[in-house]
Length: 413
Image 1: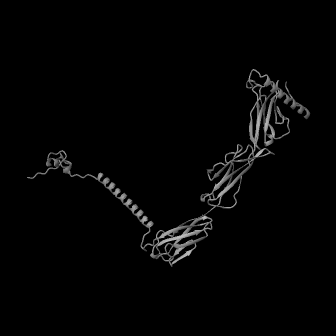
Image 2: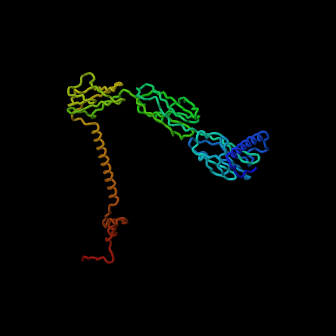
Image 3: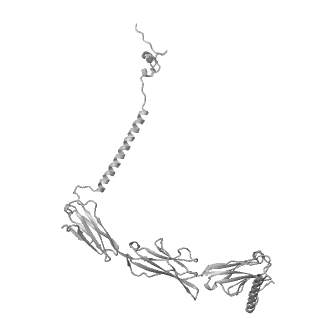
């Protein structure tokens, strides 16, 4: 049976769709009770379709193919057995559904802005005798909402336990929740999953119990949602913690060389949450020198004296607790040189020594060069002495020293 045109009225469309559905059932029944000798894959007219997965709001493409065509028409119907496309003809008035490709061996359609209600089984049919069908299941993923962290409002003290709850809604299937402290992944806690019966989506929540330390102050604790519809780390919410702890104290001197007769001060540095609000200075095993002045976190010496030597203590308090630091003061003579100055002199001396060594090396090389290229000056006698057996012969053989044909001779009478 070949169908070349579509019915002309909605009633006929309904009757036609029902007949297609009945033919599909009949085809399934006969294929079950009386299987053919060949398998489905060997039937060139058997349509083939694949299951698809799409997130809410996305676009899905449904493709139906056959290996061979006898000019029979391919058709797509939805989960309610409503005809979507019959060949190139759109039957359902839904602008979200569009024709993607139509050939004698393929019918592809797209559904945009997919909703949860679009999930289900779609049927592709080809009107041969008998009618052949293929089914494709469309799974719609409910995209989880941004995670929300609750349970933290006020700062907590070091050593206490804080309980945080992370919640995300409208996921399908249920999302997974993971906790991080900075870049460190924390141990996963069991997720609580609740289904929303109205739209068949899920609300997922997870609790984290964390015993905080000083290192957790201002540390980001993150809740990350994992779901097939999301890229890794796509939905993440952070909560920074404020952990209160007593101050850690150390004393910072004005310089490393406190010298007698000079001004000098010590600074009490306290690191805590909250910041220290009060400081107390004292001298171990004695009272503060009379020429000292307490100025908040500073202890000022107006005129250093060796009697000021000793161990000085500073206590800082921030309302949560207090911390203490100490510093040993050793006043030096007025002529004492600082360690850093001694280091500078040593560096300068080393540089000078290197420069002197380089100059000496250059002088040695230059001297050897001059000696090798120094001119050779020989007397006439020396020039002829190489092959002469005696001194007289050497004088005769020397350049300019032998008698020539043109030499002038003197005779004495």
